[in-house]
Image (cartoon, rainbow, N blue to C red; front, side):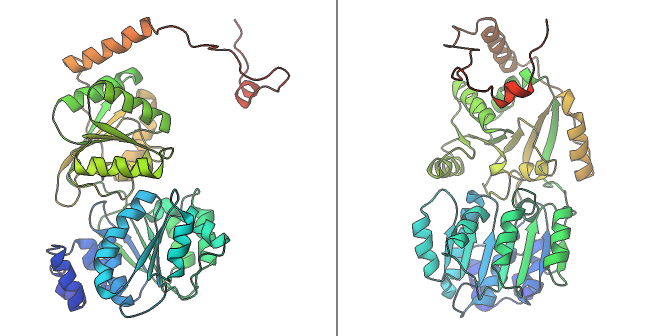
Length: 418
């Protein structure tokens, strides 16, 4: 395996850019993926999160497109934040070579994106939904496209994104290079590869589902009402930055309020936040304005935040595979970190599926019920239950106008008999 970039077939211009970026030596995924990608071959790349997958496809595509005109590369990623993150290495490596890029994501001015596409940028970096909107409007076309990248390929190919991906594929030249990269490679990726890729180079430097090597994992078996006391106890134990995952937007807001009440500098990130709010939350967390970021799985995939000391799974993810991506937010590159997971007894089957994917057990840790911080928050919650305050106006009374049919919940849930 090569231990220098000079042995990978890169040009002097690329090597100079790598020196300016202070990339000392290639990671395993870069060593194995760059040569076949430089040759124009299709590539399926699997490596743990935080191991340099983005540079593994950006570098060879910049080399292949240098000196050419028109839109030649399309990079798709599942979230706005990930697309914006990809844009930085694309800009750094491509602009000195005279190449350009455009970012096409939801939540931002579509008219400005239409104008950017009219300039025929070398790279288009996009989320599928917004790109489909532009295709339907006739504002995007890719007649000369040479390479398609699916970053976080397993998420891109799940049932939520597949119809959009298929619409985009129908607008691309059949003869093209296709590069897939992710930390997990499920059956959707294998099926897509059989249908869309031509004799791909399979680069699997870590087996699919392998967690970040330097992440110290801990599993706490808790009662539902013990999650917030445990969260505050863990945060009080050190001063590490913390990325806290919840399953739902409402849950994220609730945890965010609890942290603010406890005096922590924190932000919240989920799909109901505006693009400006999401950007402000991410930048504030990266820069240290916030110690904690509470997020749904919108933040689990591919986001590069340096030195996240602690990932906390307040709730288990919807998909077991997302556990690997969540804990990969800590212990990136050569760093180390901690990953704590809260689970109830009813979630034992989900934990078992996660452990099957990783092919390893998550070490169990005792819940620190004797910790003063834990006890204080537990008592506060019990007191709130004993005295919930004045009832809300019209609490428990239907707001539906007289004569209207009952709602879906009322239609499908019959009242209990006494």
